Picture 1 (cartoon, helix red, strand yellow):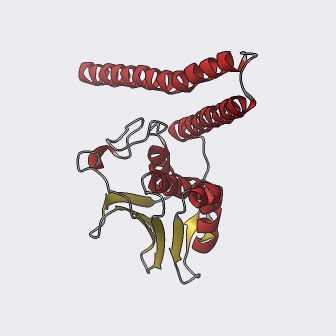
Picture 2 (picture 1 turned 120 degrees about the vertical axis):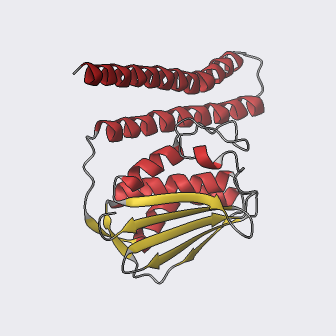
Picture 3 (picture 1 turned 30 degrees about the vertical axis):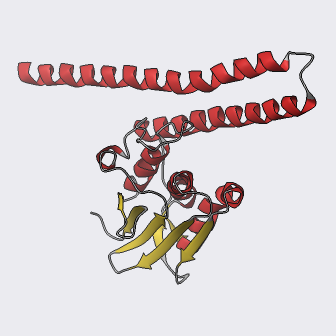
Length: 239
């Protein structure tokens, strides 16, 4: 009984430390754009500001507000998954529909970067899962690839159906993943060496939580020909 109580006390202590660290990370991630918003508000208050400069600042303001909105929304989804309050649907998900739903929000930013999305699928691949949540996961992986692929680059999604699993392999033509980052890529708030200033390190963490909660696996590595390679598998039996 004494040993068990000691173990419970240690577990609670670790949970408190993790919670404190998470709150500190969240506060930092929100404070950064808020600081920029305050600076922009001060600039906009200048009556002598040119119309061109004012429009540029308003554009920056909307981008920062969008970033905060995405951050809070993603953190709420993670907290729901942590609490176990999410009930995933067990519907027949068509991979073609999943890819279309996941890629749609990224169509404009990819077009602005002159990036091409290549889809290799027969069209009949499917698995049992939740379309909306899985699209969220795939979108975050595609977003990560987009941010690390240079202008004019390519992102490819290849689907494969086997008797054991349905697989999606997502690759890009970026610089690849630093070997030091690979073991930590799906950790919350982890930012790799090549991460952009706007990256907060929770998109891939959320993707992993969604996929593993649906009897799936996700693996990241560097492709043989260069670039990052993400392999997602949804198993047709319990693994």
